[in-house]
Length: 176
Image (tube, rainbow, N blue to C red; front, side, top):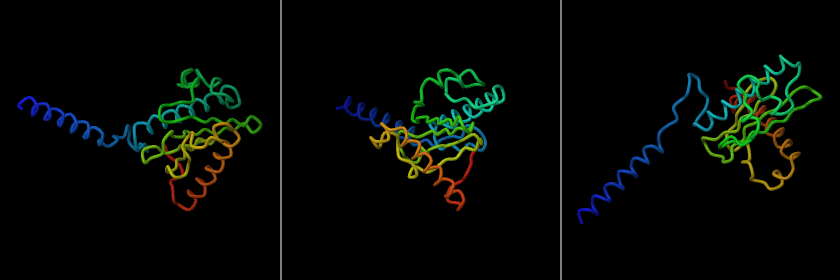
């Protein structure tokens, strides 16, 4: 009887500690940090590093990089960052436009919830984000997984919605 009570007490303490740890609020990494979770902070860090590397690449070569591998070893953008588009809870989508010397990059969450927003940027360097209801999670549609044209279309539609919502003040237009 005594050992059973000790066991149940230990289990209760462990469960309580796990519950408290799970409910710990996100602590901002720096003043003005727009992230709502650690995974968002990582996604925004990747996005900032990518944009900085593109700026350096253009200054050196006169045009933006057209692949992630071209961008590797530029600034802090590593070969490992370029080799995989899987970034933990997020997937990177990079769309270069060679004829216009522009690009678009997005960080799309694998699961949509309050701590996983979508992030978008282009050659202008403005980071935009949206609530989870504005974008479909990666893999939610079998058609988009097999057709990159639908991905590009969906991105341009989302970008148009973001611009419109920003114009009417529903979402903030740019972040850090």
